[in-house]
Image 1 (cartoon, rainbow, N blue to C red):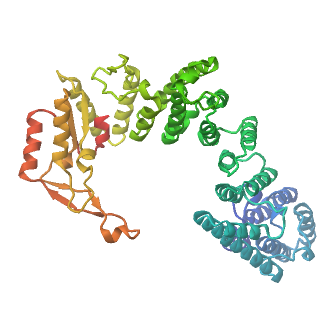
Image 2: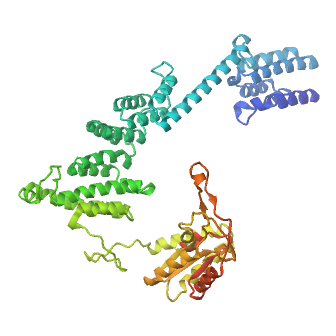
Image 3: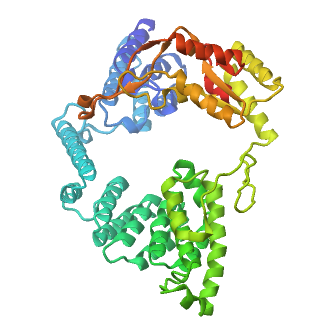
Length: 538
């Protein structure tokens, strides 16, 4: 009996366990079931164990069929060895009734049968075909080939208009058709997306609103209805959803309508600008500059808040409603500048030029003094300082990060903090020296430039700052690494990456003299080996 149990158990474990094995109750290997047959004394319990661990879910699998054959073989062996044919026959019948082995006539799709092989081959071929069609669709999106995209879409539909495609397919089609100003076709795709998948994603609404406002004949009613639907369906609203409509209102000089819509959106999404600025500030700056320009036109009497063009400022001053427009524009101007101050730390020169031209005598380019005071208005600019609690949190986080690499790194960073705090005359500026040294050095022969660091240091000292030059230890050796890269004329015509200008740089006598002077002036600090220099300047 022991030998038979071992043979049956090993046979199952070596040939079938991986196919049906597992740890869940419904997939215990059959070796355990056979062990229960041979060891558990009660036939009733043996039946329960078999019924619990041979589920019908495997009924059509080849391992399951082999399991049944193995059970029948074991039953025959036990009957032959121990002469208990009647008892084992009854046990087998009870096991068959509990586990519901399907009759052989229902097992047409077992592994190895012609029907199963044909079915698997067909599924594999369909999957390969769909993959090729999706690659064609992706290629059409990159090249903006509408005909190729429509052909791929038709192939995916396979002649069945009711066939449900993935949201990704509809997103590609809406982007292509909307970007090509085929608004009717894009809207049809959008409606099909809604019918199959429910509320579309925010990106689909953004694409449709942009297509509606940029069409040769803008469909503003459609854009507004889509935005209303977006709000009602509680879709997360990002700036790209509303910017096309807001920009269109500005282009039509409908400043009052612009602010009506803006206030409506801010009531639903108060962090509209900050969410967008966290990933890219350019769209925020662009929209605000457009609106500020229009406010300047109203204040200077060029247009009214409702978009009516005025011929002269004198004509405008005789109309009471225009005075109201200018009062509103002054209030809106202040509101827009508040949004800009909260979300744009600076603006580009191009934006500044536009604002100076639009605002005219209302604005001027000035140099802010060291105290942060505007010489024209006398207003003091807001300082972007951290509170003491915020400083403490940042300091603690940096020490924890350094400590994660070893207690020595944490100790060295704490020592640096103590040295900074012990300075009788505190440092007002920290120069992240590697960034300065490698600036504009991506040419053949470019290298780490101590001279550039020294120029910045002298400029800051001339402005009254006490600046600290912070360098990683490796740039204070006689031979330093060189990470300057350049792209040759041959590489610029290909997809090759930039190559190193030189792998190493030997510090010259003149460069070493610069470093020695920094040390004498006590304006040089080095981050140690294994440390991130960003910990130190922060």
